[in-house]
Length: 89
Image (cartoon, rainbow, N blue to C red; front, side, top):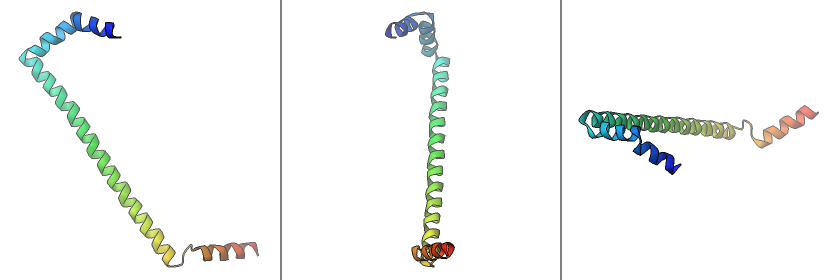
C-alpha cells in the first residue's frame, strides 16, 4: 500500500498535482475545495444540533404529558388494576 502511494506521488499524477498546486490557480482551487468541505461539515453539525434540540423538546413535552396524566389519576397503577379486575369479571 505504501509502495502504491509512493508510485502515485512520484508518477505523473503526483508530479502533475504538485505543479498544479504550486501555481496561483491551483492554490485557489485547493482553497475552494477546502472551503466546500468545511462548509458541508458545518452545515451537517448545524443540522445535527437542530435535530437534537427538537428531540429533547419532544421528549420534555411527552414526559410532562405523562406526569400530568398520572397526577390526574389517568393510567395510575390502581386504576389499571381496577380495569383489569373488571375485565376478568
